[in-house]
Image 1 (spheres, rainbow, N blue to C red):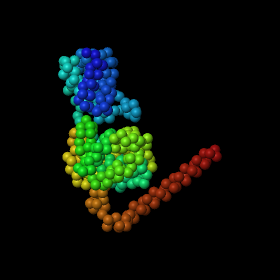
Image 2 (cartoon, rainbow, N blue to C red):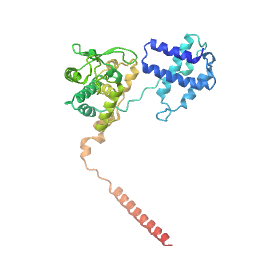
Image 3 (tube, helix red, strand yellow):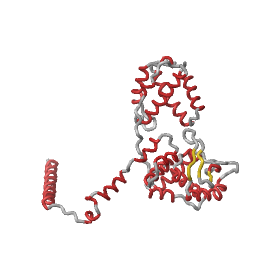
Image 4 (cartoon, helix red, strand yellow):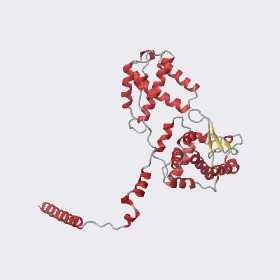
Length: 346
């Protein structure tokens, strides 16, 4: 069967299985890469896919470059591409478009994700949370946005998808409807966040919203439902003002890291973040270089406060050696200058 027709059927099946729109777009992009590779061999029908096409595909993606950065694809991107192609081939086998199973050729070892590099310290987070002007309507809204993202670890689209009915003050929970992977979940809400949300809903949101019919929780400058792009613009504005590098996802990473640091269990954090795979949460268990520095300064015998207060005395012989070396360098420099002057005169 023609591969483009099979691809359309495969993506339609993903929609029926409630895959997120972003996930379906990603799968479409990955399959476009795969089909570009197949076209080099003039393969336009699934029945003509052979073992060599799959084996050489792994080499093909190694040579590809990211259009935005101009750098080779990261390991995680290549892993995702192979995973999509495997799912596509499994779909073909299931529907008898292919009769030989080549999926084993696309096996890639799952690598533990690196620790995000945009996690803020608790002191920097406090600066960010204090930045919005609480005495203006938009400033108060921004304050609530930042508090919500840091106190719950919600994703950007989960924040913009929230409706006023999703906030349950009696149960002290926030209902996340159709989060990543089309999964619903309940996230607990602390007293501090609850206080700000109540104030926002009662006094600020009614002023910002254009029409009563709008049910989205957060409202943009036009009085309409806030979009993901609006949220990006808001965070970028404060990032530039404070000269602190952060974005929407920084709050999520910082939430998980600070919770772990203060003793929260990994399983609970996984449920709050909505991770289906515990390995996604495990990246936050890594120790920071700053934490290691604190440990060294605190416990190493050469870094104790008493030792630091002592005067560091250099050996006399070492000091004399340095002085002699310095004198010799001065003499050599003067000699070079004299030689240069003589050459210029000649």
